[in-house]
Amino acid sequence: CICSVESFVQCRVVSTMIEYTNNVNAKDKNGLTTLMYALSSKGCDDVVRLLLEKGAGVNIRDRNGMSPLMYAVNGLSSKSIVKLLIDKGAELNAKDNDGKTVLQHSIDLCSAAIVKCLLQAGARVDVPGYDGLTALAYTVQRCEENTDAIVKLLTKYKSNVNAIDRQNRTCLMLAIETTKGVPSNRMPRMFYVLRYIIKGADVSLRDKDGQSAADIAMKCGLSSTLKDVIDLSTDNTNDN
View 1 (cartoon, rainbow, N blue to C red):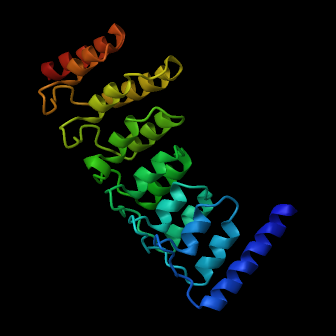
View 2 (view 1 turned 90 degrees about the vertical axis):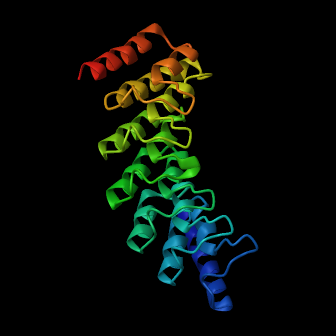
View 3 (view 1 turned 180 degrees about the horizontal axis):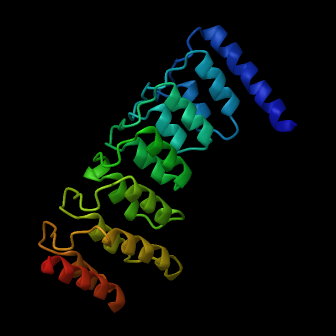
């Protein structure tokens, strides 16, 4: 098969380069190693395995603080390669120079399977990352394929739906704000996310501007049905 031939040639070339340079962890001007390039490329699983066999470092960082595992979960690598990196000791809770966690990088790819792989391996679900956001808060600001599935996964792993960002906004508030400008064909997905988050949300919380989730819902012009759900939850909280 052509793929097998290409993979064989790639491995031979990489093997020769390693022998010639005698440094499997050599970096380019941007701090990228051969392993990082392989993880960013389609159909290079065999090359990745070869590099790891030759001692490629799994926790080396590039100039932006990106680790090999971040390249894997945010690129074209298979789930088996992600698992292999973890087995080799890749740091699950590493952050890049922007504070973005491995889990958040995986969410960029919108792959529930990769997110689940990281969670099963022990990735900490509520580590504040980019902009002070937890993985759940980061996810609800997206409206992509599998967003709802990832939200369900994160809450299953006990992510705190009431965690706040630097503006004291909760996951529910962020999800509501995200509905602004969302195409009509994607709104059902966002409604699912909102309904799922509100199950454990404390809707009495307010952001730095003193706004509650219900206030934000009104400003965003959400349907009266959804606002009724939030108001009902508020009433239940006050009764307890």
